[in-house]
Image (tube, rainbow, N blue to C red):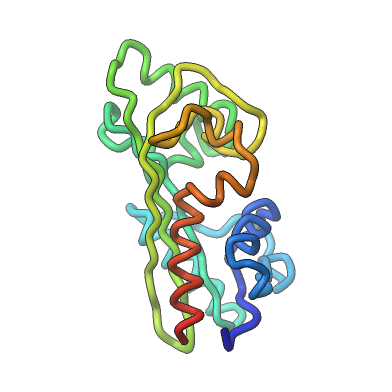
Length: 194
């Protein structure tokens, strides 16, 4: 892989470590604090793709460096794809994971179809060109939280073919199954081919 560093439009140390692990240590990811960008980036688009593009374009405009951004949504069949693009702020602007999970369980009360999918979209700005990569994992929403690992909706999401929630898995196990992991693998394959 020719490229050894890439700016990742995130200040979330957990997310940065997760993706670095998927990349197998081949590349150093530089988070937003390291390039002097503080706070949350704007996410005002109507789609995951739009939010990822918005964030990547902003970071590139501020740094001039090759970079990528992501956006992830939990799409629940019985809720017509909600929370979707609003996953991080499902229970309000404060971005409270516990309140988001509580609201999701309330919205699913009495619904028998608990099928859902996590979808992640990466937008890479590399050498002046823009590329999109998607990762999807299907599964179901549990009736109660299980596990203490992970973040976001991990304690409620059981991937297809598994009996455990993402929050009950090790980071390595989750990375091998997760939506973000699948998108990161596609990104890594692209970069290796450059």
